[in-house]
Image (cartoon, rainbow, N blue to C red; front, side, top):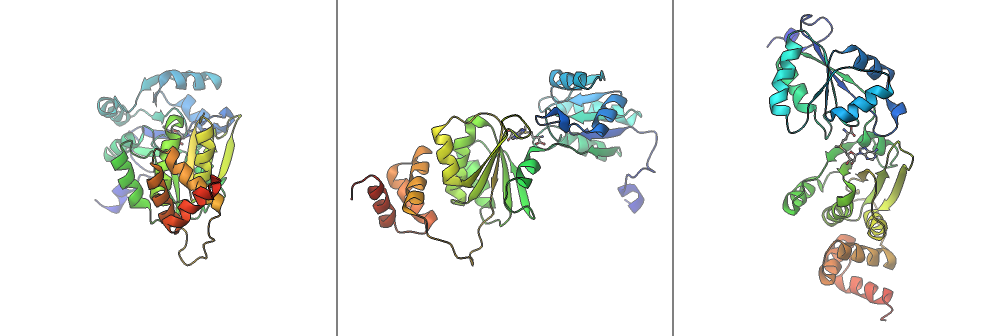
Length: 295
Ligand code: SAM
């Protein structure tokens, strides 16, 4: 392939349509961009993850563009039809339910297929939960990895966490509220008691940031049912050369309780805490006894 064909700048093939990957709000409708409203009103067709939801969004902005459903379960059959639509000279916008299409949402495969067919793909930037959480987290923003949703099965989840455990950059996870505590426990178990931030209900009325060590955040949601949408932002592995202050008795006991609340037996929770906090098992056991008022 020569260099000219690798680029798809404005001088490209005029008879093909353009695929617009269009961001939509993750809560606050004011996060819709002027450009997104204009393009969604100009294109003849929008491929939407959930047509009912997108219809509501369009109505809010006074638009009535035709919609077609494009989601995880019909992308194999719909994708080629949409590429054909683009190849016959028609523009198309792709939107997901919220945020950027292609980020833990449909749209990525359509972009791949369109590019393979020589169609120009144009991103329309806007709201995104991961980056919004990161920039307000207070954790390092210079280097980060987006992990998204961890696998559901324990073995695959553990394997994924082991793979990223040595990374120094900030890690960003997505999770559904009903799996939040299970996922926090798994992250704590594999990555240790790192600084982390739970960004809840971003851009919405009850937006909230909880900052602390993973065991502290877990303790909060072991007491209270997680509600709303969450991004979990976790600090990278801490510099081994940095002086690490020893944890207090309270921190140690909290970590033991967090592991136990995550389903571990007391004995295992003590062993795991000792490993994470770099203490002897005896010291952890002593801290638990102290807290229980038994010494
Ligand atoms: N495409 C979206 C984006 O660009 O951020 C992500 C969609 S993914 C299916 C949904 C997950 O994103 C949720 O489970 C949650 O982890 C995160 N999320 C979406 N909206 C959010 C919000 N308003 N506040 C916090 N997290 C949110």
